Length: 222
Image 1 (cartoon, rainbow, N blue to C red):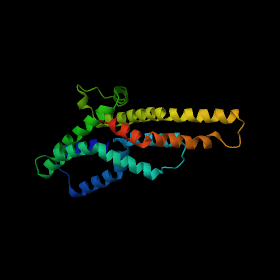
Image 2: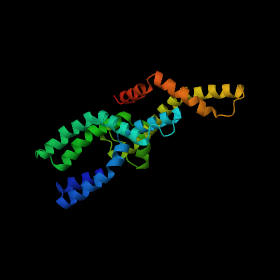
Image 3: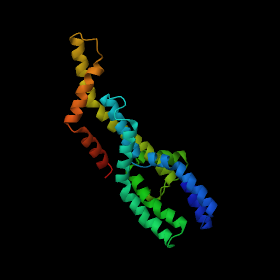
Image 4: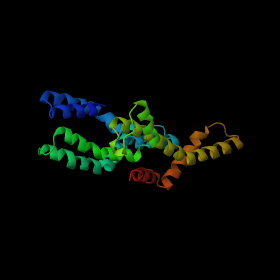
């Protein structure tokens, strides 16, 4: 990963030139969307919200922009303590000259490692250790980010799909009931999905579904 290469480059020289800093900054900015989508709660949140919209059968409502915006704000809310810790332990001391850039990188990566370790499954970590032919460290905290990041992504994909499958079940029951009723009375002019959509939306509104889904998502990270 770029961060690992940067950490090694900084540790060898102790500092980097201004042109190199600009190149690294531009590279980091270009990778920022991928980083936000991959190693933050944004991944799980967007997957679950997408499954929810599919289960409701509302096509493009809410729109992708609304779902992504909601996912970003929830991600900022969840990641705020970690970002504050990184700023306090790494960025501020580096600005004051108390830490070198290599030391600041190492200190800043520690809170992120703790977060990734909480949600990365042991099975996924073992998979990438085998793929990269990396020996298992003595402590989980010593795992390299190049192992933790893909393991976290795989774990979040599985968790997001599990939550999405559970969300589908009550709406699937409504679809089955409506389809059985329409077939039994011989109403074949309208597709059952169109008839069940208002009932699914009504059920979701009556149980205050947005509050339940968003609240459960946020609480799953604490």
